[in-house]
Length: 444
Image 1 (cartoon, helix red, strand yellow):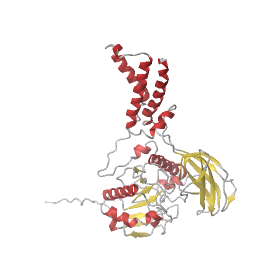
Image 2 (tube, rainbow, N blue to C red):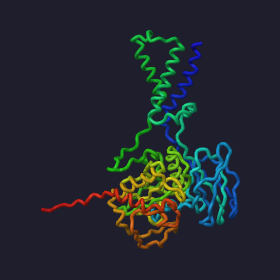
Image 3 (cartoon, rainbow, N blue to C red):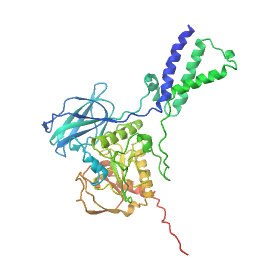
């Protein structure tokens, strides 16, 4: 009967080994699938609803030809068969400036001309229905993106069931405890006694334990390229950490401006119903949408902030450099784009997210010697979007170097509720600006 103890021992090994393996399991590269939801020659009007379209996606956007102001709704089917409305469907408002590598790559974009912002669907979307709420459209297509998180090896269902309780570094102690208990059960099953552990058997026992642990823990992925953290930078997840496997798609790499003059604050629209662990998947999905669907060189934003206060480096190039993104048509050069994950048209940014935006703006503007209260002037660049409030070539001036996207382009971004609080945002950032005095050389 003692041999029956081998069964629970095996179960404990199947639970403990994947807990150890999960930390170094890399997330899969996001995939994009274009799914037509209207007939090729069909012109659809207000009130049209597509048939149910199966998807394997965590994030999606709608593309179409026709009315650029067309408005869409999306219903999502969950794994349990229920349907609910996706939140925050809005027209895409990220655009490169003319003459940039992003604009050149975008010109090669196949398929429909217009697009919505990408929308987070969650991890259990199985089908979608697209409806046209206003305007007219043709060639309606869903860009379905799967940016699922890493999964443990097969056989780990039991382990994953406890990861919600035992997470982070504590998972290692938990997993080793499971494996130790499994060894104890095996020892009992074979009537092992410590008296039998002679000096000659100790090395063999240690070697066997090392082999078991080596089999459970896969080789760590290669470390990201060494990059120094700029002085004073707030804690953030580096691009190498969340997207080290996601390439910059244009030859020559990221492009820098000669200086940074101002910051543009955005929201990503979409859903506010995401957990802290979803943020990396959302950002990786936005990268895939920008690169695969909109044909940018890289993700359009320079930084992301989630509602829990987590800060993420966005576009490749360096957090302390004036990297040119694709976040604000006509205003990308000499700006930095900070996007808050979620839709803040009618909701306020939670306190943790707000504080993170303040800390990031204080540091980024200080690094570049920008005193936001002094304002700035810039010349509007040309952009394929044609969305700017002024014609290309116009010299425009602003009283503060922290602006909402809606102040530059025809968009609701960063949301009405968020934008209404920009006075407080600017004031809080201003109180923490620290610009080192210019160095001077005295000639004797």
